[in-house]
Image 1 (spheres, each protein chain N blue to C red):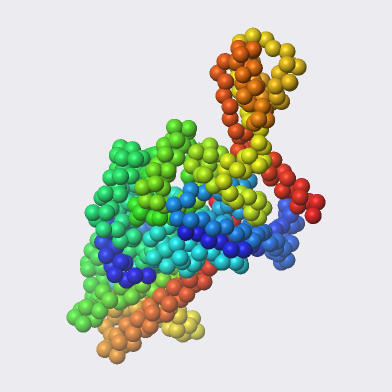
Image 2 (tube, helix red, strand yellow):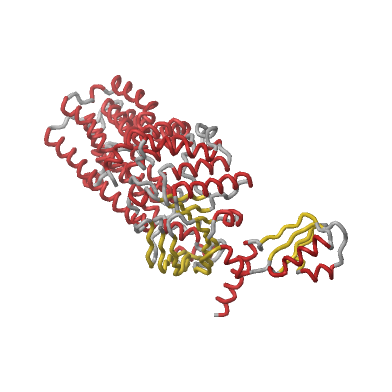
Length: 329
Length: 267
């Protein structure tokens, strides 16, 4: 269980203009600026939930995760994870949580991952039988067997990420903070990691808070999303609900088998994309049956697909609105 | 920190420390070369004292002194400040902070594990030279000989914790290299690494007596090369113990305060 109430985290950052003179001046007079990385965020996540944490670069996602994992002290507000105050980093809490950062490694670079696992077993004091069972389970799920005894430095990015995940989960944490766990991975590996996270969540009733630049990760894994922008929470709720509120229209994609006049297409919906004979229309939900009927019956369209608008598009609109509102106020 | 857990983890931490040491062979060879300054000083001072003793130090005294210094430096030297500084700068310290054993303990275990390998090259050479050329200046008193090991252990602890504390300063200062250079300058002069403390100007030698540096190198060297009475032995060992306790406390305090400041914006 995770609770954040009026969470604020400000950083004091040294700022100086470019150039030699400014560099010399900054030796004597330093100018600081307060960066409001997280600015009054409140949310609550129950045990076993999978929540996507979204926002543009610099929105405060990683900072929030670091506060929740106990790496940063909040400037103000309160945070509770699994009944503990994270920044005290009590053993009881550290045994229940894990933080995976796609861009930071906990594996020992020149040794095989099995050595990092042995070390984690020792520092987390995991009983041998439980360790063996968990490692077996993780090895099966993530297909780690050929990687365990290779030096970490010789693993590919995707292989390393799988090994990172295993290292982070050997002590069977019940709260997972995953910060860009699929960054830089190919599609197959992204799918493997996604399946694994879902399976771990279901097997251990673990709470998952995930940030990712790949919206597919979020759509596939997280029924609920929290969106922050410039340190402020701008949405917290069901993913489908967000899509419906922001853009209730569907995207209908199809391939034309014969030429169709543009004005006929315009009567069916707004043309969003055309790639040769493949077209995408934006169609209001209530008009879907008639439009689809027309496309298939009259226009002999093939390979027809009906989808929600992409999450990227929704978020772009959302961040745009939030910035306009902020500027107006 | 749960002490029982730390003790249970120790064999694994030591084993992995050994594996890491072996993996970083080239780095260790370079590190060993950086600890050979006493050999340079040995050449210099034995030629000064070749014809007549220099302020009571004969050529054999210098041989014994610098080879003992080489041994102590090899067994007690540490690079933990650089390691901490790098981990903080690169953000990988976050991973260490999420483990339920204090980093002072895990890092110490890794460093202890490295000692036998670090000493592999230099120590046999130093011991052979010491026994062959400087044996007349070596101590033979059994009690004093027996106290060399605890004295070395305390010297290691003081050195490690001071460097750990300096590393923890990276929580405040992004780059601590200048600070570490200053530390190494003071250490070289005031620990007896460059030259025996009695050869220093009087006011510097006085300062050296009340600072921790002497207890990091000169004291175990003195135990190896100068016959001391029981009172002197007790004073030196208790001095080391006192500094070790103070340095552990300082390291823990700075670490605790530093972690509160651990602020890395973004990834």
